[in-house]
Amino acid sequence: MLAFLLARAGVEVVVLEKHADFLRDFRGDTVHPSTLEVMHELGLLEEFLKLPHQEVRQLGGQIGEDFLQLADFSHLPTKCKFIALVPQWDFLDFLADHARQYPTFKLIMQAEVVDVITEGGRVAGVEARAPDEDLEVRADLMIGAVGYITNRKHLSAPLSAKTELALYIQQNAPVPNLGEPTSRPDWGFGIWHFRL
Image (cartoon, rainbow, N blue to C red; front, top):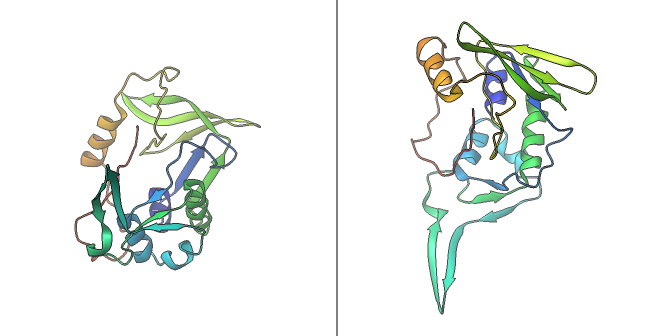
């Protein structure tokens, strides 16, 4: 989603995906109401909901003979008052297809990051291995989103990328204009797993 938003704002974006597709069993299948609201604000929701999906409007559990309702999404101030159950690979394919319409977006599949390039004590890029070539990607801002498991043993840079990213944004990064301000209130659901 971030790559799509940045490309939409005219920022050059390179996404490296280790595999040939997004089809991984460990990826989650829930798209939460807050994400669906962003999709609505971007004008993508109607098309997205044409993908095969299920809608969860309430969550609960059976405890003995009693049913305990844990969540009811009908009161949310959103267009979609449900969690959409969609395989994440369909969601990622959808976003990638829409991001490709922007000339500043580039997705390189089968590109495994093998090392971090540091210069002057900061991350300046990554080295990646693709089937036909080794790649070097350099940027002012590097973001790693590698899901639930991070294996940095093979990376040479002894750093905290989360700390570096926060410091970089605080000190150096101009915030791009991502379009009209949102009317969405400050709320949301979901757990984001970013390992940087």
